[in-house]
Amino acid sequence: MVANRFTYDLTHRGISAWMLSFLLFAFYLDLYFTEHLSGVAHALGLDGKWTLYGLLYTIAIVAGGIYVIRKYRHNRYQIVRTCVVMAVQIVFGFSVPNLLKFLHQPEFYFSYFWPLKLDYLNPGYLFSLPLPYILYSFLAALVAVPILGAFFGKRWYCSWVCGCGGLANTAGDPFRHLTSKSSAAWRFERFSIHAVLVISVLLTVLMFVSWGARGKYPQLSAFTTSFQSAYGLWVGSMLSGVIGVGLYPLGGTRVWCRNFCPMAALLGLTQKVGRFRIAVKENMCISCGLCSHNCEMGIDVRAYAQTNTSFTRASCVGCGLCAEVCPRGVLRLENTSALVQITGV
Ligand code: SF4
Ligand code: SF4
Image (cartoon, rainbow, N blue to C red; front, side):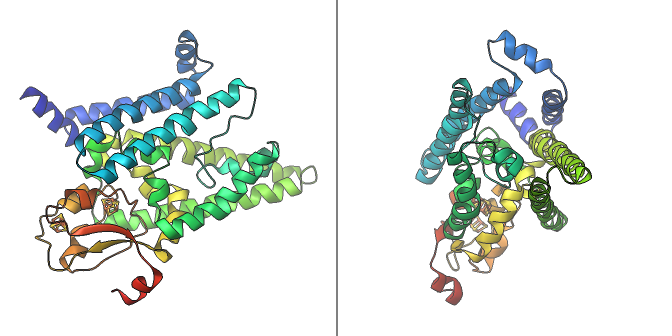
């Protein structure tokens, strides 16, 4: 009884939710702007605060993943997806980069791509890496990501590979319903996510120009370095970490993914012209609203179901929870052919 009341308070913006949010904010501010956690890391025999953070992040995804697998144990899509998310984090998000570091190789994250990881198309950094890493970065960002996005929508990355989405869909699952469904939130999302994408593209172009003219225009180099620092501070630290995770208990788990992630913006554009859609079975919806309530991206799924409209929304990460919770089996995630997209049959 007491446990139930606490769970409700925590997952419905009660006092404990505010306290947890405060603690998460404090943790991320401490992580990014002080060296306290370096001391903790060294006391634990780790080589620095980022290794400690990677370990904690991985533990959170694995523990949350076990919770999610138990919760949705009757749903194969959720089980397989969650296992993949956990495996990607354990292998590519933690073990491989640390093994590379141990072997005195570049610490490289094979599950992150430009523009989420801006350095992976930053010539000043990228061209200091061995050739296989350079080829991997270019081919992944400019060829594989858009092609996979066109065929499978953004779900292949946002719900199956990405560590940010991984944390949201595991440890963050109890807070998924908190995402705002208001039209004001939707208008903000459309502006903010594309603004960050434009800024990330401009910065990448600037990094290439500055790298090409290195040694000739010191002011250009200085401006580029300042731009990179500002982007790292506001986008990399504040929006993705402090705000993105700090707001889990109050604003839902996809604040970063929905409003600021440049990778999600890019994949959303390819999704709109690609094959992914959520198919709606006609005249089956009873308007219970469970789908909209559980949508972590704030999409009003019920409105589409009520009007028998199959849809593709740029923000949909293909988590599949709307289909999972629907008591009438109205919704189905599918990668359809271009012909079906055009004719609607
Ligand atoms: S519409 Fe469905 S699949 Fe897409 S993000 Fe919302 S709940 Fe997930
Ligand atoms: S959960 Fe299913 S029945 Fe309920 S509103 Fe959504 S589509 Fe309709």
